[in-house]
Length: 254
Length: 348
Image (cartoon, rainbow over all chains, first blue to last red; front, side, top):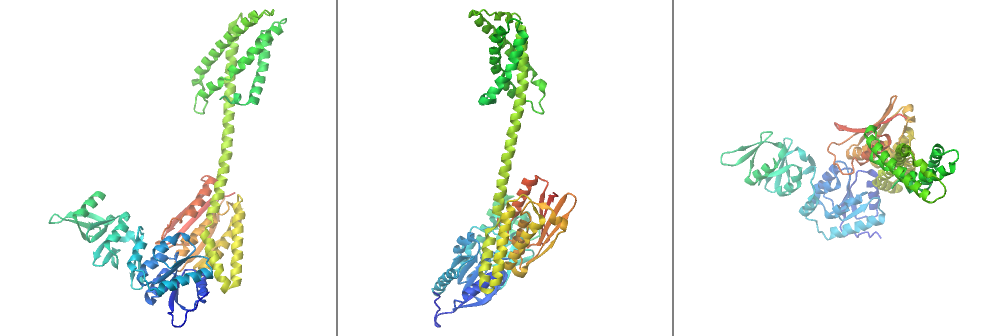
């Protein structure tokens, strides 16, 4: 049943990500029947996973969902562009739909059999051979859709920042990036301001300008500047421009 | 409908109760040589009166005696209804005596109508008696009804309790444990077997204690320790625990599966979200009237909150409320990376 590939077929690198040692050991054991797979790393949490995946760029991820600090979807969001194939392994069946929305190869419900695992591996090989990498943007978009996050995740090379949404002061658009200002620091994230605006609108954030989203609770006062335009003064004295339509929305809110 | 009319057996008993009243009337009004006439005149009248007396039920329902209700407010209604009944009875007696007279049986029933005031007073006073009787009747029906309701709500609470216990066992706990067993079967068969036994004992205890009213804290602790031993296989060195309880505390009786959900909460929403894990500490303290059990564990303040968190704690709180009605409590608080759940139950 295990069709061991000939030497000319490509070898695949894989990372096993699960916070439970027995669960990782099981995948390793099942993989011993698949000689074309090289396990290049085992990770016990999301941070390790993001670091290992960005450095090693594996062909395949075995990804648990419920883990400390970062869950499986957040890991994927952070490394999305470097991923070819993802096989989710979890005891929870309620994430299956979300998993296929992020173009997972397969979704294994714990406990799973060696036969079921082999099926997933065949799907993975086919997906990787076809080399149809999932466009990173599509993958990120489908994950972010319709969710109002409690925190934003930012990858800075192999380091991950987790920023609680209520710590953000404001967000500024900068070319293809946004600059997120929180707790006295700025973080760059590859995302559009419009996307963030939709995500954060129920969290007390407002687009006050073409280039700015403001955490409304940070607003100290609004001042009239010279040419009939207005300026938002934040509690930390930062000044941000307010557009005419931004002022209308802000007035309605206050 | 009148409750006595609704039940044939009760109606029979009620009518028999009027027989002595009829006999007293016969003896009171009858002459030494005419008992027969008095009996023929008064006994049927008494039976008719018995049905008229039932109308006191409606007077009583219209003027209930509640604890905050003054009886004298109902007095005008009692007096006027008694007077009406008295007048009605005199009228019926007059018709009855005329009817007997016209039958020409040689009876002289009209002698009893010589002083209609006497009949009026007797009928009115009897009606007052009927009113008093009906108040007692209504009170006893109310007691019966409330006893029945208490019994029903007790059954409902028991039902809810069983449902809550069943909902408490998280199926993902089972799936993850089975996955661990599946893994250990290949690498460490002895450990796999041990895990199977732990799981079986845990499930059996959960089912067994779930059906009982109270168990000793010692038994609950053994459920908790099995649970933690199972989770330790999954989480490895990330999960540690300390238990502190005096012998007296261990002998105290508590509702089953009150502590286990707190520990499960500590593991799932505390330890499991920490990279390096931590220690779940269980301590208990006993004074004259209360047993306090405290579960303390480190938490990640930035952990994601999903809809399942707090579910186990809510069930514990509901069960304590239904069993102790406010005398037992579950308090939780989170301070500087530490989560504390403390349950206090009256010492039994």
